Amino acid sequence: MSTVLVAGGAGYVGSHTVKALAEAAYDVVVYDNLRAGHREAVDRLVAAFPERRITFVQGDILDGTRVRETLETTGASAVLHFAALLSVVGSVHDPFAYYRNNVVGTMTVLEAMAAAGVKHFVFSSTCATFGEPRTPALDESHPQHPINAYGETKLAVERALPHLETATGIRSVALRYFNASGADPDGLIGEDHRPEEHLIPRAIAAARGGEGLAIFGDDYPTHDGTCVRDYVHVCDLAAAHVAALRRLEAGGPSGRFNLGSGTGMTVRQILDAVGRVVGRPVPHTIGPRRAGDPARLVASSGLAARELQWTPRFGLDAIVQTAWAWHTAHPDGYGGAKPVDS
Ligand code: UFG
Image (cartoon, rainbow, N blue to C red):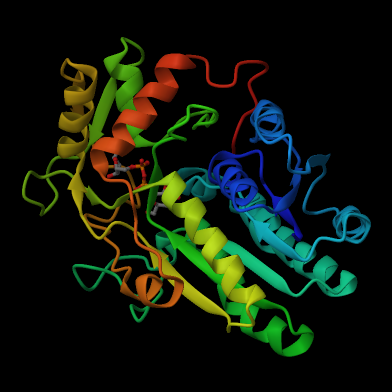
């Protein structure tokens, strides 16, 4: 079975994808600078899959020589690339860092792939490449007009990929996640962002008696006034990466796919779902809107169903239950020193 390099494989979606790859009998090289990722996540995966070769290389995607050497020495046949700065708010404050890491860093990885002769690339993209939705559900034909630097950096890479393919023969699949959430149902790995900005882990922390939760605006044009999002389980996203890799290995063409459940949930519905699982209401206040939040973002994932044979297996209850189980068992996440996301 082939070896693949997972850039950012110590992070949230990356580590869950490493697990899915190991289950699909791939050997994996995790390449991560550990600024936001967790060595502990990799160690757990190594211990859980003694029959697979999962190795760790600490390195930065901006270090093209190291990426190339890692590809050449491991004989990796593909790169799955998760190593990105991911905060919309962070990108507003420090767009330099976002363009440097997410655009220059990704180009550095692709250049190293071209030099090493690696031709398959799976890219973590985002619904933030679309900007303000013009239709109730977003399919791949929806225009892409990002409203923040984070979305722009991801779209810049998406737009570069066809040109790079023409020049180098690197075929790619870009996967545009909607709201990644939940945790490994086996409890091996989970979500640990620092700081944590996402709704479900924040709601769980509030229900556990931690920092209070503010709903960012209740005057949106939605049925209860709070923002509608499409929550998709991280293990379903991981499965989509394996399907994308297999498509490329089978000689399939490059593609771009929107990955969501197709079901919109308001912030209040999420708090209700968390309250049901936890067994008590989530304490919260109503705060002002957060800049850059569209009222509604819901995926239409028909193309992924047709071309990748991908449909989500986990619903909202499973998302909240697996997240709750992870955070209850690991109140300090992976513990240790606190890396800080930008
Ligand atoms: N929210 C709150 N209070 C909080 C945290 C979040 O009300 O404390 C709300 C947000 O306003 C939003 C919803 O909960 O309406 C979900 O927020 P998240 O921060 O969990 O997720 P986002 O929808 O903002 O972010 C996701 C992805 C990003 C992507 C973005 C596109 O995580 O990577 O969608 O807009 F860029």
